[in-house]
Length: 224
Image (cartoon, rainbow, N blue to C red; front, side, top):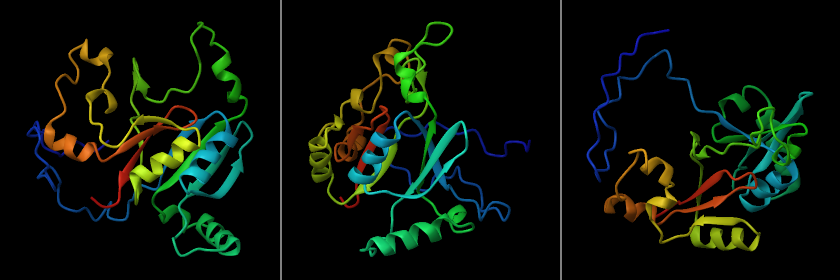
């Protein structure tokens, strides 16, 4: 494994937005064509998850693949100039082809392990709940959220609320509990303190909702 050539990352100044910090090394000819292609999350019910990401958040299925023990659903946002079902089918087919798919950014893979829809009602060998971990429930912390940009956050929240979606943080709210930072962490000396006003100014313009499996989805305004 190559050695770490980055300098020790210094603590960042509280409340200071720091564009292009001097942590970045010079561009590399080796990795200049690398790009983040997709994010994959486990789901327990394809019907409810697809309804959330397709009907409520505007994504469309590019392709599906039943691999035997599991099925994957690849989703993306079609270009805004697509108006007809035929154009949508053409876009999905073209995007699913390599190298188009492998050079497309912003894809979401929904990963359904067959029969996992029953796991929240059962227990593992050690008696623990074997449901999906969303990364925000102590002590199983890790994954934080998915972020979607929308033209009007308040309007999007209203649509999602009408669709029965749980709203975790509405526009205008910027408390530390909605970041989220848990009491479990604070009790252990992790992430203590209040949210700085400079960040709160930006964060209160966001909203956060829960997808069907409990993953946090952040809604970010496309213009402020």
